[in-house]
Image (cartoon, rainbow, N blue to C red; front, side, top):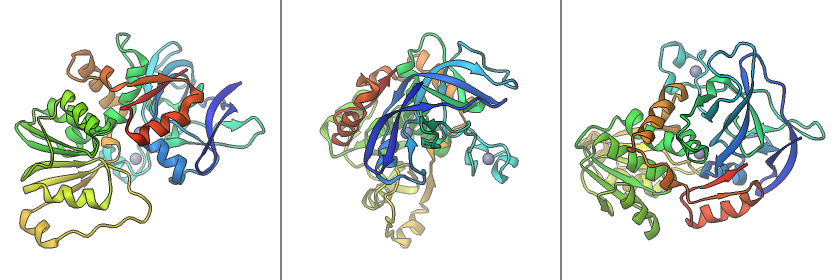
Length: 342
Ligand SMILES: [Zn+2]
Ligand SMILES: [Zn+2]
């Protein structure tokens, strides 16, 4: 029997025995070895965030393919893989016109797992990686080079794809740009790394927590505090006041990239004069608009080349049973990432 961290009611987790489904012809069964504890999991735990309960948490996982469906050709049992939650559907209007990064329904979920009593479970962002095994569509699994430990590779599945992807794909930050980042958790630090990789001239890091600012400087931030007249500001927090502050930091034709998850019902007031006069652009990034099959190999190669620091983002590894403590430490800002090792 497999095990997983299930949310039976909002605000409570429980490690339960679960039964994974038989894989379909396009699916793979992955034995999870590592899974990062992300703010989005906390968001699901606290608000449900469109996931029917009970739900299995986890969406930043890596593991080993155990079984591949009859129509899977790119993966085989024994392959080490990282999972992505935004594999494009290939069928929606955006996919049909080639804009896979804006896929409206990245719903390439595998068949749902069940509790031991037969009750069907939903899975966080179609993955549910706080579990010993998952069944996912082949498009969600990407091979990992042998040199990269899976407890580091799993971060590519969400925090790194989101942060670096928002810089390189959503915003297309240019060499020499002046960049600001509001919120320096794992995603914000990945934005800092992405900006460094893109060749940004100045990188301003903002956070209320001194420890996170120190981390941002380690990862490549050149300044702490709000910059002025910046080309790009990345809001990783997603609150009305950070959106307002982000816009106020922009210069002519500057771009605000909105990444942070909004709390239900939150609204923001912005000066239309300022937006018009400065020709401000606002872009929304869902997970860095990543396409796993295209982006993950490139991110993993950057890690192999020493240009992307994955190891430095793993603060500690924990057991499946320690997930509540990991959420507390995430809320307190004590960790960049806790990674569950299975
Ligand atoms: Zn689509
Ligand atoms: Zn995440």
